[in-house]
Amino acid sequence: MTFYPLEKLHQLHDGYCRSFRAGGKALLLVQVEGKTHLLENRCPHMDAPLDRATFQANALRCPAHGIEFDLDTGSAMGSLAGCIGNLQRFSIAYEGNTLGVML
Ligand code: FES
View (tube, rainbow, N blue to C red):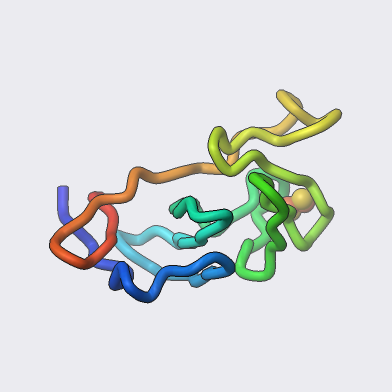
């Protein structure tokens, strides 16, 4: 596995949302309510990119059709829970003052 650096820790803040490519994957790094999440930048519903997603509490809302996903579990929320796949989440790795991912 290889460490792919993504962002300096001091750059993160609530409302942070930035896309990256690393190890052949499209990733989305976000910080919501003090928690940092690293996700695949692709909605499991119909593959829409999530760069323009909106966030409320612990939910990501896909801009394409409005499905909401729980940021902690990746699962769809509400009546669609269990009906579509989960948002893919990645573990965050750290090297010094840099946040990244092992792929
Ligand atoms: S592609 Fe995301 S909700 Fe449909």
